[in-house]
Structures are given as structure tokens and as C-alpha cells.
Image (cartoon, rainbow, N blue to C red; front, side):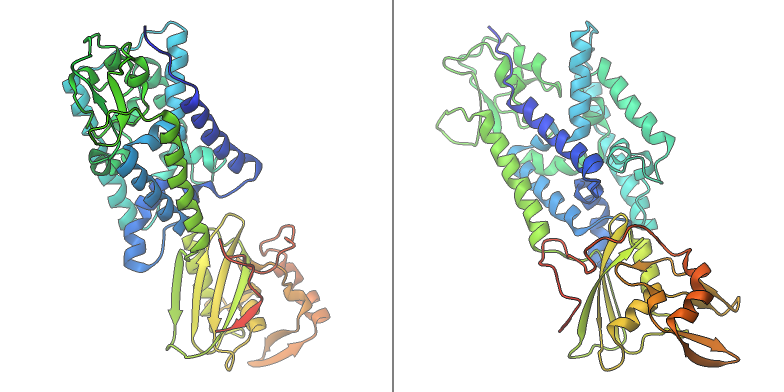
Length: 448
């Protein structure tokens, strides 16, 4: 008699999916920062320049390390337990079966040929990402369309791709996961040497083929003594489907002579533990996703942490860097070092400066004050705003007939209010200094 799979994996899938939806739509968090494929896309640029493209953060690299760690232990268990695309695709297929729609099995040779598409897909994405410095795939990524709440860069292709994945899952088991997923190509060499595997006892096997039919990846488990296929997702559907349970014919566990079955809860506990360690590492060891230094190194300085509106991606970090290098009335003197943690809406910036040549208010003014466009001989509104700092409440410097003068806040309010009204706006958060991920809330400035 074939056993039905236990509810542990389904509940784990539901929990991870609910966590994603809660973080995106209720807490309105920056979910892209926790996508492991973002770590793949940004790794080369981070090693080469110390910066990550778009709104990616170092958390992407920690999560990538976590999922690759799970692959070394548990094969592709992340795919069958935590990936939202895998969960929705699998659930769509299960619903189709319950509705009486017959799913077709793909011939083994064709299945292997189609699986070979994963590597070219990965290569194309990485080539254009590394060449342009932008996440070119995000406009076509149905997962990004979900976690970004239909972000600005989402195209119709993202929804067409998502619809095609779900439609294909009605007739074929997990087509995207098996043949097109670029992250699966990254998993491949790690999963191939994964420690925990399914083993079959040929002496007690009845050759009924139930295990092969139950496998969502269509691995011929009945012909394997040890399931070493790199695309095994450790879903353990084959173990649950085996009718011979005393003694068990199919066992999941690490290598060794002792034939002891490890429960599915052990797999889930290890998966959650490794991913939890990756999340904790990202919080405890925050690293900026954009850094740049200007001028000669100096032995002692001060550090200023700011929350900056509209600092939401690498491009905006570069723009902030250029604004700090302005050469008009609000030019900052001396060497400067900028570290940025972009985030939707309000990002964090840490600026190290020489207090003998400039000060914190001067840096705030350089970021938020209108800047002088020499080519047009006009002042332009700053694209940024510093949380907790209002330029209209501070004396302004003006250029008149080639001379610089200081005017009162009241006069500057009358003169510049129409221009400053175009700067980034919104409700002022109560926290005015930057809380670096994983760190304590820093003071406004501190000695280095």
C-alpha cells in the first residue's frame, strides 16, 4: 500500500510563501535583497568593484551562500521547500491532477536535453548583467513582479512568463524548475556532491515503479541504488510512495553502513537552520553595497550616518556620490568616503570626512540643497532629501553678481521654496539617523 506524503513539506512551503507575502505586502519590505539569484547576478561586480547592481544588498550574497550550503547538505531541498516559484508550480500541478487533467511524462532523453537549457539561460543573464551593470532579467522575472509589488521595471513579459510557467505545470511536472531555472544551473555542481541522498535496497524492492512515478522531477528512482542525480530536490515523495516499509526499501540520509531512516522533519530543521544562519550573518555583519573614496586617506576623521530619501539603488548611490563632489557654493572640502545601503524609499549612507575641513551640516546641505548648473546658469532641485533635515530652516548661501552672501532662513524660504518643493517628499520617519542592518543605532556623528 502506498503511503500519502506527510504534511510537513506542504506546511513548510506554505510558511515560506506566507513569509514572502507578509514581508512584501504587509510589512512592505525590500524582498529583492533576500533573493539568492540576486547574489549570483551581483557576485562578480562585488568582487571586482565592491558594489552591487540596482537595489541588491550584501544580504543577497549571504542568502546565496546559505542556499549553496543547503545544496551541499540536502541537494536542491531549497527548491522543493522554500522557493515560491517551485511551490506555486507544484501546487498548480496538484490541483490539475485533482481536476482530472492528465499530466504527460517526458521521455528521459528529451528530459535530459531540455535540462541542458538551464546553463545557456544562466550564461545569457549573467553576461548582460555583468556587462551593463543592471539586472536585465528583472523585467521578465515573475518572482520579481511578485516581490516588487509590480515595480517600475516590470514588463508584460514578466506576467506572460509567470502564466506560461503555471500553464505548463498543468500538463508537465515542474517544467521551469527542470529545464529553464537559472538558479538550478548554479545548484548543479553543489547538488551533485550533496551529502544526504535517497538509497534503495535492491533486496527488498518489488520493482513496482511507484517511486519513479511519484518523483516530480521524473528521476527513474527504481533504477538507482543511490539517487545521485543533481536535479533531485529532496522532496522525499519517492520515499513516501514506496509500498515496502518494513523493512524500508527507500531510505533518506547521509552515507554510512547504518541503514537508519532520517525523518523529513530533520531535513526541514537543517534547511531552516542553514537559511536562518545566513539571515543572521547578513544582520550581524552588514557590508555596504556601494563604496567610494575621494581624496587621499586621512588618519582620523568623523563618521556621519544619514537616512536619505530616494536612495534606492546603485544608480542613485552613484548620483549621491557625484552630488557630494559638487563644486558650487556647497562644495565639500577635503577627503571623503561614502558607504551606501540602498533601500526602497529611504536608504542609508555613511560618510567619513575630515572634521578639520568640513562638518556634518555642510554634508547635509550638499546632499539636500539645490545645486548650481553652470551650463544653464541655473539652480536645480536636489534629487535627494535627508530625513530630519529641512534646508529652509538653515541659513542659505547665495551668489549675486559673482559674490557669495548668507541670507536668513525666512528670506531663503521665500526665494527657494518653489524650487525646494520639487525635492523628494513624504512623511518624515521618526528615526533620523541610519540604522545599519544588523548594527546598533549609530549616533549622528562619531570619531573614527
